[in-house]
Image (cartoon, rainbow, N blue to C red; front, side, top):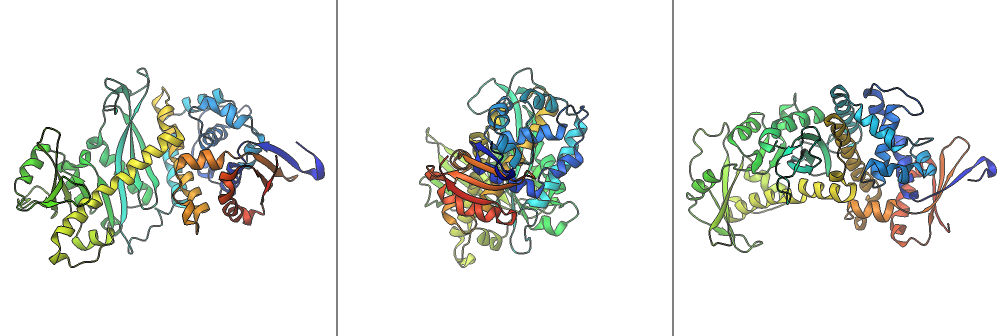
Length: 461
């Protein structure tokens, strides 16, 4: 550190991330959490909210456990100052703050997260008149220690007889933003979690008192949300729905009524056709049902049935198709199938990115309320990465396709120097000129910080 001209200079292993931190500081991103969340814990050197903030910075640094905060954040005073912190709490103290959280604190955190989402997201400001809002809902198993609260045997891919919890997510798919993340016990599946997740989403997006917005919102969910009770609940709420029937037996029965099967040109061996059996009184609103089948290894058909109240015009608009619907029923039914297939690039991809880049499955707290608080910090980190990509890749299409893992590994982790004035404000970021991977991002970082009068340069370190 140098005192020349009352200027502080720090070497940092994450100079690019420091620039993002300066932007978040300017936005007062953590302000709603400081306002709403009141953890009953005394302040010695750091307040409870400051300790949560240090943990959040650690997540953006790629910490797979809070123990890594000491190495990644505490040892980097320039990064701390760029985020608006004069110091960093020790990792064990951050853990104690999470463990001190109560159910009331979790509710306060939900309220703060709603406010943050409304202030900074694109999903909240979606133009419902122009296009349908698309919400994908899914669950992801998170294995944890058997002594953790609400850790029970459940479905965890590739881990038989393992105990853990479930993470339920609602994603605003057009924007890749997490609208709602909730932690459930290990035995809970989407059949029990769907309605609570959508009710929380209605709170965040303020849909509860807006039937017009719900009528312009598509809820897309796999067969876990395809039971009659859940489908009718969504239909009664006025949502557009695209799901798969929960019952395999019902699906096979409905598939028998298909009079004409069409070959899927994109997936050899897969066929689809419209169900002709009347829906009678099963559903509270008119629906379309499309059967999809493909051959299993034993030669038998695996069958599923899509259930939706999307109109043909709506699905054609969603899939950017222009044709005479009455003359091209084959293409119309295929559009419904492909619209459902796009779930894989939405919420399922968001889980994979978070697991790879943020290490969501690696951080588990024994106390359930602590895990719930950590889940909200994870969701906020996800959205910050989404917003950062949007800020940096605007008018730069080549940068839009980079994933979270590469963004954090190849861009955020750039060595260099950070310069601060006598008031502690970041004035210059001097990046390592030898790091070629960060070069395409430098002009975008300069534009991002231009209003804050932060210079972004290349220089030897």
